[in-house]
Each structure stands twice: as C-alpha cells, then as structure tokens.
Length: 172
Ligand SMILES: CC(C)(COP(=O)(O)OP(=O)(O)OC[C@H]1O[C@@H](n2cnc3c(N)ncnc32)[C@H](O)[C@@H]1OP(=O)(O)O)[C@@H](O)C(=O)NCCC(=O)NCCS
Image (cartoon, rainbow, N blue to C red; front, top):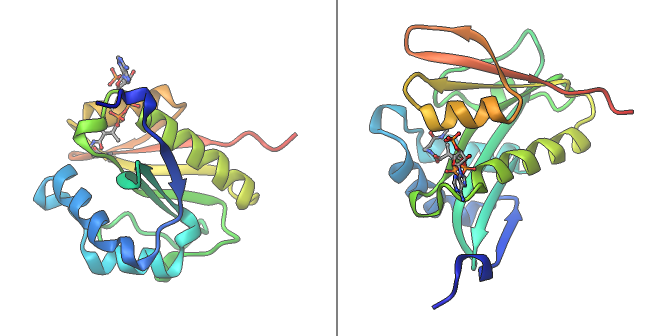
C-alpha cells in the first residue's frame, strides 16, 4: 500500500485525448443541471489549452481547472458558451469556467493547491490580466469557502448563484 504523501502529483495542459477522462470527472463532480458537454470541453482544449491545467496522481487525472480570458465588453457566464466567441488573450479578465477535484482526493488541500498554482501561472503567462472572476452556485459551501480563503470576494449575488472576484496585485 502506498501512503497518500508517497503519491506523485503532476500538472499539465490538456490535449484532445484527455476528453473522456475530463467528462468522467464532470459527471462525477457536478449535478446534471450544472454539467457542461463534451463539445464545450473539446472547444476549450482546442482553442485555449494553455488556459487549463489538469492535476494527475500517478498518471490518473484527479482534478482540473479551465479558464478563458475576456475583454470587459465581451463575456458570458452561461454554461456551454463557446470559448472562441469570447476569448481574447490580451484581455484583462480571467474567468474560471470549471474547477474540480475528484471526491476521493478532496480535503487534502489539493483544491487550494491547484487554484493557487493556476492563478500564479496565468498571471505570469498573461500579464494584462488584472482580475479573476468565477461563478459559484449557492449551496456549494466547500467551493465558496475555498474561494473566500483564497482571496476572492463576493462581487454580485443572484437568486441561484454568486459571482466572485479576485483582483491581482500589479507586478512589482
Ligand atoms: C471545490 C473542490 C474543488 C475543493 O476541492 P478540495 O481538494 O476538497 O479542496 P481543499 O482540500 O483544498 O479545501 C477544502 C476544505 O478542506 C479543508 N482541508 C483540506 N485539507 C485538509 C486536511 N488535510 N485536513 C483538514 N481539512 C482540510 C480546507 O481547509 C477546506 O476547508 P473548508 O471547506 O472548511 O473551507 C471540490 O470540493 C469539488 O470538486 N467539488 C465539486 C465541484 C465544485 O463544486 N467545483 C467548484 C465549482 S464553482
């Protein structure tokens, strides 16, 4: 038996061949009405692979984070919107469109780790980005707490969901 801390964790960008595993995570981690389609993820992988990270453990994908970059006047919080309709790599807003850790690996700070690594990597790779936004459904307490602990604030509250925001400090 291997202990948790003896496992090897890895971060990398997704490729088309990861789609099946990504969709398995989507099915396991989100209720039906909040799931996005394989077509949506296929578009994300094709149009902006450098805006996503997969977390794997001993070569098995156990978590992911996907994002896109928007300009202020062209964006959409809708599920299953097409990344290519809104992506502008010179934009100022980083939008996190998906973020999951598979249930077996939760509560080991891997979510905190993946989010932190992702934000640092995106800030470095896209220096024009000055803030990050995301949408979290009311009742998803674990995710909401994780975002608050990671420096996000509530930007807007709606009946079913909350928009959160984190401003980036300008590079010194
Ligand atoms: C949200 C999600 C990604 C968090 O992943 P995670 O790996 O469990 O997150 P972490 O372990 O980093 O942190 C979660 C909590 O566990 C706590 N924790 C982490 N490791 C711990 C440990 N070893 N001992 C005790 N507590 C621990 C953290 O302090 C945090 O506590 P809180 O919930 O009281 O704030 C995961 O729950 C998930 O995939 N949920 C379903 C999909 C989802 O809701 N995605 C977000 C969409 S907006």
